[in-house]
Image: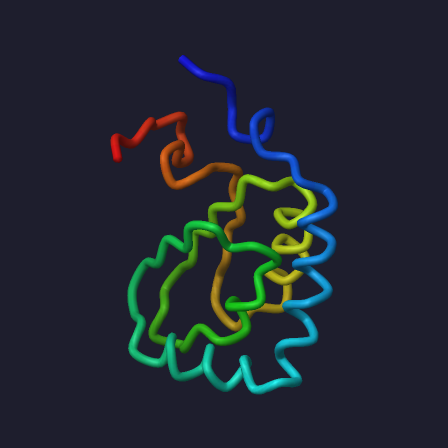
Length: 108
């Protein structure tokens, strides 16, 4: 079995640049787009590639739980911070689209 995602995904420069640029994008109207994009979501949500968690604040009350999967450790830490202020329960976990929580390898 291959190594865990955190051993394979570590892009510290990209993560910090992405974090800064995505935060600035909220001032450019992206926050309103996130509201529209997530408006009809309900139940249990798995967000793969959660980044720094900027979607979390936009989940409607119809969402029972979000499991946010993020492989990059810096972005995962930022997502964990964002989860504390989310209007719905959010659990941030390590993983990738092909290596979901519980060491379940997914064929693509």
